[in-house]
Length: 545
Image (cartoon, rainbow, N blue to C red; front, side, top):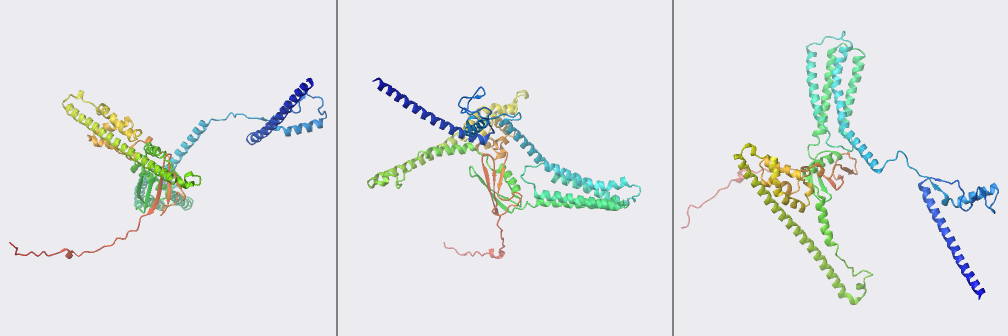
């Protein structure tokens, strides 16, 4: 019995030790595999430095190998190299650190925004600076042509007669006209920042510089080097330069202003969120200039974009259509279609689904009708409240005519006094129509004071709130767009033509633009002879009694 117990205990111990050894082998294999994977991942992301200490498979006690370990230096080096190659993932060290020049993500975003703002300011004022420099060069060159000979060789110059003095008067007025023309056409602050340089402006600037440099070269070779004594000819040379500059300015007026006046194309502008559409006629413009004109029309004509109203309509539609169930009785996995005896059940399921769909549509219709009813009710209450407030103001105005000057209220005080009587009705109406974010209390009171000063009717006051107005009616903080992106397959400096399409994108929506040619209209005349309108009315003298 003791033998059996001994053998049984040994067997139990052997089996447990065997399981533990197998478990340890498997855990070491898993640990080795995971270490290999981790090391391979870390190898792609950080720098790996091998350790100076030995690995766990070749321990060292007090700097000496344990008994049974190889003692030769070569064997020790080979063994260490082999163990390092096998277990490098378990004993490596990832060296990381932070730089003293590191910055946070917020600082990077702020730095990029600051650079972008400076770049936009530079691009905004660069055309103005270039135009100022070119204009100064154009105006100063004729004067320098007249002053240099008088300063360098005054003793050798011939006397200037009456004709020469007349040219002085001519060049003075021409320079004054040229100065006003340059100021009116070129020295204007830019309305927008375009992605590319205007081709015609660059051409005119280059032409002006070439003309001025050509005159300078001729002046330097034929007058300065030769020290020409004919001052009358020098003055005529300066007058010819001013005349050439005036013709260049006339060319600039034709290319920049007159060429685009006649309409040649009809553009269709569609807003992506609500489908609001407008049509405009424009002339010969490049794509970027046409985009700028369309954006100016957009802020003037399109109603203010209201994402709250769109999201409310989508929410109502999705809430009713989400509960619909569609059954496909012809599907391979459908039990109703697989059994011939379930035909009545399949038809009943389809009929029930159709009824639920019609019921959901009816509920959506009734909810839309209820929404319109609530809007009409809120509107009627608002109209009544505003008319009562304005009636009270008129009555108080008549009383103020008989009151002393010290008791007369200011317009601002009157607006603040009557505003609470209509504030609740106006607030409910704006909340119902989802336009409460478009009007602040200060803007409403300011508009009310404006209407009272100009003696406007209640309808004139309510017109700004009963219907959404154009975008420019509200402040820039309500425009929902301060930067636009022009998306076009063609170059933005090329001219628009039939079939041109481009996109104007902002943060919340986009404007799709399509260009069409205005058709050629053939108008004919049809002559009508004035004699053909004459007729004779014959009346019988005798009538029946």
